[in-house]
Image 1 (cartoon, one colour):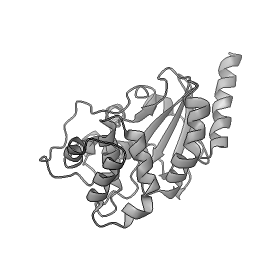
Image 2: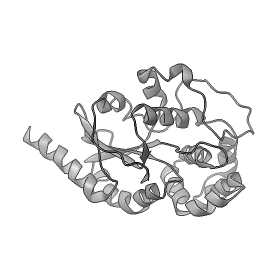
Image 3: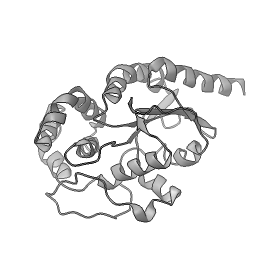
Length: 243
């Protein structure tokens, strides 16, 4: 994992995530940043004025959700596109999670960006925005995985914007629409709020995986492997069945 592993329990988890688990991807009605079209936002937006308001920050930190919104278990993942372990989770572990639990309606996956290095040179912030722009055309997860498959390549490129536009073509996006989104400030606020939320929760590394149930306590897991996530999900499902 990048930086330190997350472990233990988060008592405020349900309070923070319960109300946003159904939102999915999209912009909310806040407008703290405004850049001219044609200038890509490449680093964090200053959200100092809402940093201490957890409820407002929660509403601004829009996740990307996959699976049945009525699924009894939430699997929350904070990931960074420059994190190699995040790539391993997305490309190796997540398919098993989706097959056994997401596609069967037993759990839903909730993804938050946690850009560990938000500098423009690193490109991870722009990558997070690019994936969300792809989401406008229903291709978030395809683009998300494309970024991880080419992680080493684009990380070393000086022209990251060009690489990201090329990946859009690879996953079948309308190039004009995607380029317009990428070359703007769209989703800069959401990605920035995701970062603030991760910091507020004390998450020091990625991928951070948390598992919980509607109306109940949730906990962060010691690692991102499918078998670990499976045990946590089965515990929740067993408790629900017993009650």
